[in-house]
Each structure stands twice: as C-alpha cells, then as structure tokens.
Amino acid sequence: MLLEMLFGVRVTVDTTRTADRVFRTLNSLGEPLNTSDLIKSHLLSLISTQADKKILADRWDKVIQNVSKNPDDLLEYSLKSRGVNNGTDAGPQWEFNKFKVEDLISKVGVTDDTLFDILEAKIKNENDAGNFLTELEQDIVLYTIIVDPTKLPEESHAAFDRHEEIGPALTLMRKLNYTYARAPIMAAWRHWGALDGVNWNYDNRSFVAFVKFLVVWMFRYKTIRDVKGVTSSIETAMTKICAYIKNNSPDDKQLILQGIQKFLLQYDSESNFSYKLKERSLLSSGKD
Image (cartoon, rainbow, N blue to C red; front, side, top):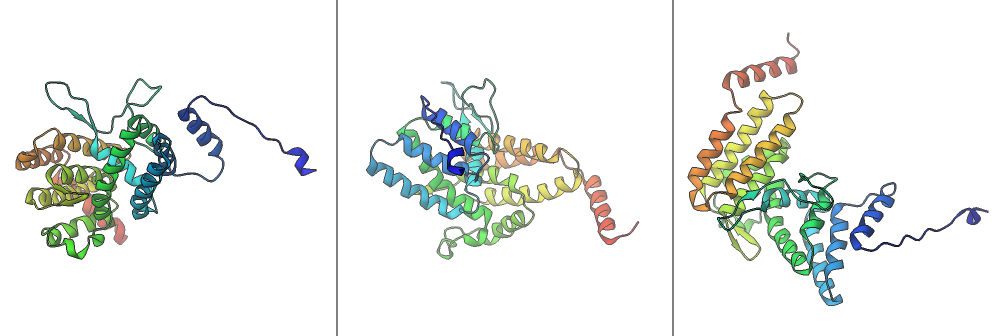
C-alpha cells in the first residue's frame, strides 16, 4: 500500500549551475550540506580527466580535514581577506566583501546564503579551480593558527620568532570570539609575509603591533558600543582595513599601521570606555 503512494519525479536541466540550485532547493528540507560540499562538487565538475579529478579531490580533502568542524568558515574568511582586484591600466584597486554573482546587478557581501554563488562566479573553469585550491592551501596555514594559536608546529617557532608576543593576542581573540578580526589579520599576514611553498614565514614587528592593537581595539569598541547594530559596524570597519592594507605597498608597513590606528581610533573614547567598563562591573557584582 505504501509503495503505491510513492512516485518519482525526473527533473531535467540545461546547466550544472541550474542543477546545483535545484539540488540545494530540494535538499533544504533534508540533511543540510556545507557549502564546502557543494564547492567540491563544482570544482570536480570543471576537471576534464578522472586522474586529475582524483588529484584535486585528494588536495581538497587534505585542506578540509584541518577545519572539519566548520569548513565553510575557511571559505568565508579566505574570500573576505583576499578581495577582488577591480583596477585598470592605471593600477590595481582592491575591493573587499563586495562580489559579483550571476543574475544580480548589485554586488553582495559574504553570507551563508551568498557564499556558494560568489565562489561559483569566481571559479568558472579548470584553471580557476586549480588556482582557488592553491589559495586555500595557502590560507589554511594562516587560518589554523589564527583560530587556534596552539596549533603552530613547535619546529616553526624559530621561523616565527614573534610567536611569544603574538600568541597571547591571538589566544585572547579566540577566547572572546572576535571572529571579525580574522579577515584583516589574514590580509595583513599575507600582504606583509613571505610565502615558501604553501607555508607562510613571518617576521615583522609592524604585523605583531597590528594584531595586538586590533584585539585591544575590538575589546574597547565592543565595550563602548554594546548596542544593536555593533556587529555590522565592526564588519564594515574590518572590510575597510583589508582594503587599506591591500591597496598600499607592503613596503610601507609603518605608514599602513599608523593609518589603521588613526582610522580605528575615531571609534574610540576613553571616557565612554571607562564608564561602560564601570557599568558592567557594577552589573556583574549586583550593585546599584
């Protein structure tokens, strides 16, 4: 009786993009898939031979296994920290967290709903697929350390000789869940660092000062601006910092750092910070 009530529906589409959309729509009521699952499928669909598909799948799985709890976060912060070059013959002009997607006139920021569409528009052929995976192989090194500084390999400490200085700041950022700081930190590390294969070797006091200042600023800002809308304001500020870093020469680290400090300090207020801190202290202690 039950079998007689079941029926199948065959849906024929013209493009892989449409097929992906149909699949995501039909699957929305079932077990949700990560965007990373869909992107892996999209990448493999662009590869011409089975041998190359196997190579790409193995490389992908090696990256994703490092962020198995939430692989979409890696995709998100890689995008947010890299931006898009909208420059002309006059020179590069990098724009952050504004991406073109098909069927939309306006550019969009990275969200759970737009992540797949942005990446699909970015990765259109086999060469794009390979370049994107290379970017992730580079970014997983930065992302893993930023998310959990204890994962920095012991043998890397010598090359990363500022680790003792920067470790506490990154640890505090993790404990306070300052996720919005990840994008500008990744952008600065990539822009000011040196790439050796897929490993980022870093030794620069301006970068250390930048991370320390950014974490302290976020604590002060979230203390002062403990109001509705603070999240969008922080994201806007972090996006502007990414652009400021990328659109200036990596040789001008000190000038970039001074510019970032000047920009962020316009949101700061010593009197407001002291008042809010005292207010929170009284609330937590139960005093009037």
